[in-house]
Image (cartoon, rainbow over the protein chains, first blue to last red):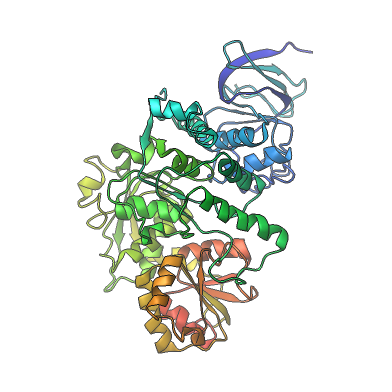
Length: 152
Length: 416
């Protein structure tokens, strides 16, 4: 077992979560891209088609697409089909609104973090915690045999 | 950039103005931080695209604001809902979906929103003025307000449009700020049209929507429109094939009296020529059937038909006198419909197959009696979305040809 590697970032919505990373180099739109009933990726133009985001730590450069993604994310969080947490390279207003609305309505905090996402691959075990200063601490337990090469 | 809040903003955030205002301000602050706004600004009005039922979370949100005693702080119009409340029985829906969908429309009224239920709030008495800051949802309304009127809004949507209305504030960023409204990409229209047809404006909209990305487009060489409905059709099409929230048409729209004004003295990043062939190609993609195919229905009024469009349609109906076999659905705002009814303008029109639809739209809910045939429309937006939304085949044509086709029973299009 390799030692966990820590990195920091900024919370768009603070919270704690752990799960297996699901990493995409291409942004995914929740509206028209994810089935909120199941968490399955349904966007035929996305490499993640057929995979499931539920309970995973979704890692991607940014959000994408219509503002209706806020509703889809909030609905997925309500149904328990949403990712456990999301790591983004760039802040995303649409996903932030979905996550905040779900917290407001259902008291479920799905952490949304802006941080360096290089060198993460699907299968890494990711632990999102809250540091003393209120900012995120992301611990990564690298997968031993990653399915894809690591991007620096 | 750090977001600076006023004392009034803080008071809302801290719950001094009730739990609903606090929740709305909290969401607005998070959104503003995410887009990098330096502060919030006052808005004169809002338009909420929240009345179409897409799932429980959307309804739960509005219900919570109602329970918290929330009220909108500025005049607020509502976009279409899933129902035509003016014509009961028009929309067919299972009871399990009907109850929450109706409640969603009513809950918005309990927050103090106006029962406009139209995607064309610029055709109501709540039309904003030049230079006014507003927070609008609904892509065609956004592009019309920014481009044709010169009011200022970003593309707001889900939850955040309502948060702006509940607080009377919007993030000071994007198209609210003058410098971001300058043109970035120039389209030179190289098309000679004696009397510019409606479809020319649709075609230009489709083209610039696809080619602009997130850059503000400027159109040079656009013929003077007959009326603002042609600009409405252009904007709706541009916001369908792309994410256009503002366009300038040189010599036509209010922030583009000259090319230099449209670009605020800068040079365009890119210049693209639009030819007749480009327009024809863009329009051809809206039709999946050939001339002569049997017509099941006609759908007009996406975006909602204006009074002036009705005044063009009614003589065409009398002239072509289609039978009532093929329904001619016309989506329109309830205020426009009320005016027509007061004037008696629609008397006897049902004999020609006319079916006015208010509060909703024929491509977002189940209204059409038959989905197995070809539906004709003069709307680029309807033609683009209806096949995916409700599974119909579409033939796009000028309004006159739609009505002639209804009379003939099959698709008839004049050479354009």
